[in-house]
Amino acid sequence: MKPIITCIQLDIKYGDPTFNYKQVEEKVTSAIKTEKSTIIVLPELWTTGYDLTRLDEIADVNGEKTIEFLSQLAKKYNVHIVGGSVANKQENGVSNTMFVINNQGDFVHDYSKLHLFKLMDEHHYLKAGSEKGLFELDGMKSAGFICYDIRFPEWIRVHTTEGAEILFVVAEWPLPRLNHWKALLLSRAIENQCYVIACNRAGSDPKNEFAGHSMIIDPWGTVLAEADEKAGVISAEIDVEKVKQVRSQIPIFDDRLPEYY
Image (tube, rainbow, N blue to C red):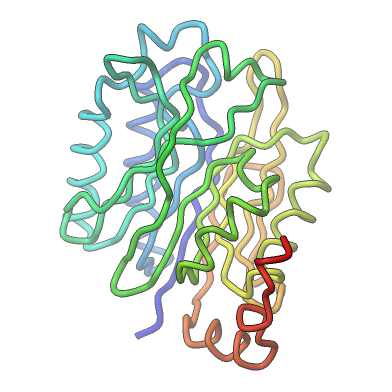
């Protein structure tokens, strides 16, 4: 059975985790009924939005509430969840962290955003991660990235040279740079010959308007599904065997010359 991946493009309520947890529960429940999803993907900072000045107050301590919440949903609906990212408050600061939960409700991996986006003041309120985003779901070699990370192809390539076949990108990407969002995602798919599953947010906050346009892209760079700018859901069936086929047809990984790079 080929996996069906669903991106839930939310209009996140600024600084209101209680509302946003409830909203995600409703959206996941609805997606399970209508989309027959195998894997559900959420956007970046979906519990709080970019209410950075209040993160000490509203961030999830050690991600405990989020992990428990996502685990219950995953187990209830027998669905894997790539849990976007949340503000994760730890002893040494707040990180922007993705939690991955399998369909048994088990914790699989966490990844904290490596590249902080100074234009939105992230470096003043968040601490950068330092670990890779590699993980597996049902034997599918995957990697997680958060928003600004996609502007760093060398970071993406670290993961695909270690076997990643599906790249999950979660974001709060602004509308004025929508053309960058699309071009970067297509490039990352084509140059790495892999699936790119990109879940952005919709709507606006007091300082930004967001682009939406979540996308599911195959290893040839074909867009299998794309949202518009409004809140909504997109889904597509993927076939990981296609990654192997494309990589054998144009063997860029065999032809790399890293000693020159």
